[in-house]
Amino acid sequence: MHADILFLGVDGFDTRVGLSTPNFLESRVNRAMVNAAKRVVAVCDSTKFSRRSLALIVPPSAIDTVITDDQLTDKDAEALTSAGIEVIRVKSSQ
Image 1 (cartoon, rainbow, N blue to C red):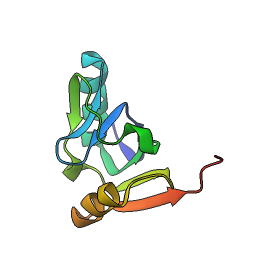
Image 2 (spheres, rainbow, N blue to C red):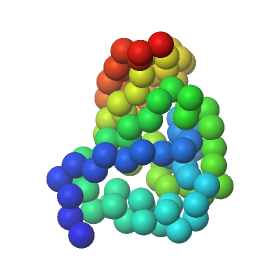
Image 3 (cartoon, one colour):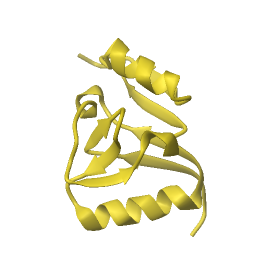
Image 4 (tube, one colour):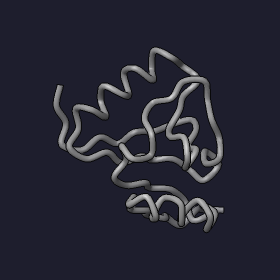
């Protein structure tokens, strides 16, 4: 399996621990996809941050870019950028 860019949706994103999902089997598939991609983009709204689910997918260091809404806290944004992760905030419709 090979991908130039992987767009990965997640259920939880703890900036210290990593990306997670409640489904153990899904975490294994997602991890394999991350390992096969040249570039990994996590796509998740701000409510997914500071949340952990049952199964870890990958640590934050495996992510190149995060696309999220403009409600992401400055604390989470700073943690991501300090880790070398590009953060793209999209204006929310709220």
